[in-house]
Image 1 (cartoon, one colour):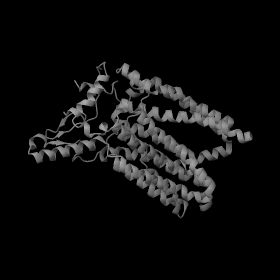
Image 2 (cartoon, one colour):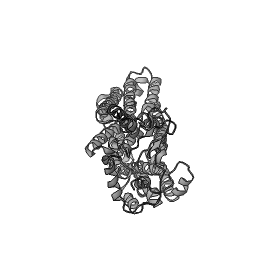
Image 3 (tube, helix red, strand yellow):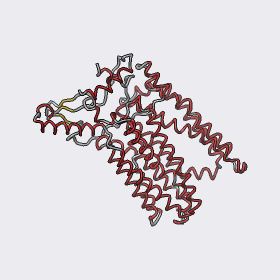
Image 4 (spheres, one colour):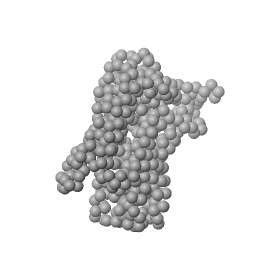
Length: 459
């Protein structure tokens, strides 16, 4: 093993003074493997650490993260700016505005499935070109919406756009390619922040466009989405390399074989291959490592074998802040009264502030917990996070407007506050009964310390 490969591991080992006694099944290609039938030896990350994304400099990593941040904003524009096109579309196609909301419902539901469709393929084909394909497909399909001759065509285009949207699984996958579990807190928080901004900033821009352009904003809002997608795809093409470790190891193994043959030392490196060279495509899980807050990271470092610190402890921040959702909705319900005149926005703004806090912590903490609990099978778990969010948002989009019209914003927000309080109780239940739930699944990680095998391999 090269000295460059040993250096980062020795530093990591020095930080863990108390050596854990448990072991964890790592991903299949972590240890050296040899095919007895063909004599091939599979190269490992430890042998070629300097060729993986872990070895990127901090400057290069944050350049990539900045592009991922922009991608998160661009991807979420498609759903968040739609409301600013509804009046124009209702006028252009001559239909009630409530029916126009079906377009966004179609997109959000198909987006929920799109997150699940794209993620596993990145395990085999890599991240870079799948992300490029997704961004360009979304841009092309979105640019076609203003030219749709009827609203049925709009629905079809929105359906295809949702399926073409890769979502956060690929961006979080790139983060996982560059950072070890305990080092990526700031990176994941930064990317998650981009996702939140993608839901809040575009409606502001869309509102300005709708006010100044009028009905024609239905065209320009979609073209803005398309141009944003092309813009971020361009920067992604330039600044973001292929980060998936299997692709990097495949390339390294091929270079070693070629170098060995050129130097006449075929017996040494002629049989070394990458993890997926000449292997048929198959669907495997995508490791997406989540958010590690500082307090929980200190607990894991102090007691690596603590099951609570490694798993359910990650939900502590959620349990302390999930109540903000019910609180924010209650404040919104109490102040969303037109009778308050120009002062109505103050109370609703405070309510939205609490709702935003809850949304961010829910997004980050649930991903963190599921990744830690499911390990190698985290793709399906974290993909389910996006599936539930987008599917429910899509289903409730058309009926939500009808409910608000029938009951009024105050009663509607009050009902949502009641449901959110029940969800808060569910968070507490999972925090307390999480170990029992995990043991009932054959796909969850059973041991406490996810770094044990890696540490033991250094001795």
